[in-house]
Amino acid sequence: MRAAVLNAYTTTEIGGVVVVGEVDSPTIENADDLIVRVVGAGVCRTDLHILEGQNFGERPVPLPHVLGHENAGVIEAVGAGVVNFAVGDLVLCYPFLTTGLDHAERQGFEHHVVDRSTPGINAPGGYAEFLKIRERAAVALPKGCDPIEYAPLADAGLAAFRACRKAAEVLRSSDTAYIVGVGGLGHLGLQILKILSPAKVVAIDVRQAARDLALRLGADAAYASFAEAAHASINPPKAVIDFVGSEETLTSAIDGIQTGGRLELVGVEGRLDIPARLLVERELTVSGSLVGTYAELLELTELVADGRLEVVVTKYSLEQVAMALTDLREGRVLGRAVLVP
Figure 1 (cartoon, one colour):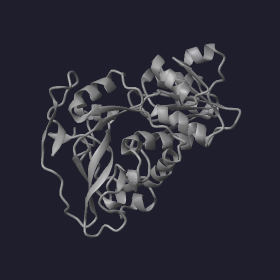
Figure 2: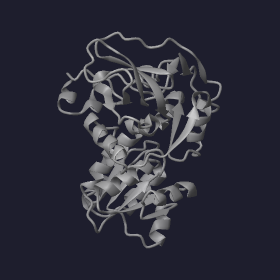
Figure 3: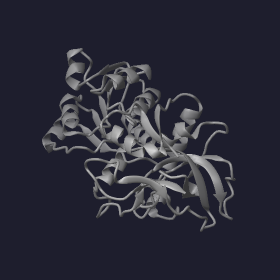
Figure 4: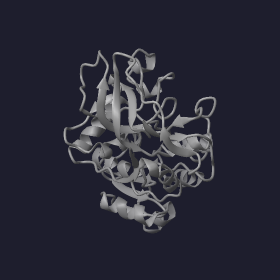
């Protein structure tokens, strides 16, 4: 099958290290295996971290490697023990493959299972024509839908949903919340927060096109920075969901958030250094959100199926994989980049 293979790490040009070529197709090995023909594979900043050689666990991801952990498509083959899916069904792929027996998973936290398999990170991913997953990781999609629109939910949407759900716990109708970064995650996050909370939602992004998108998707206001929002007399936020996580955005969030407020981190680009006294005296909560659970993905998928959540995608062919990754790194993608093998 055709796949985009990462053959070397790089922090500069991507074109020479991610190459489309022929690799072995996945095959049914276990009774609960599914082979999915990939229709859409989301392009994530985590993919950039992998190709830069950053550590995942104790070391970088071994090469050669097929990226892609946000996947949706059509079932091509099923194992003998599969009971809930059939060839031809449309599915969204939950990003973690687990047994259901781990202690964390028994408590409902599939994303905390230490030895989980994650296609695109520690197993071959969806930047390819076909992908192997387990039945318990498949989410049924509505018949006749476009799986491309659902692919970004598997990570971008799921992380945004989990972060927004936690932030919504502290928000009331008189409150303001900031969404920082209106990219692949943030454009979903602002819509989700409008659904889950009664608060006024303000988008913060340096890009004019992203701010325009935020307003179209329902943001109550959009600004280039915290300072610009403050100058416009926007109320200080009771909650900040930071999808960038740079030192600049983290510092702005801590300086600007209300006493008793919550900072929810999804972006991981920077470092946060907060005196303990400040957290205590201002009763601030700082929390992180790592993807989410299967149950949360089901709820999120229903929002899209019901027409309540719009997933904005920029499509690239598999041969344009280097362009997609470069555009993401340079901030040129509006919404979520999705490869279409």
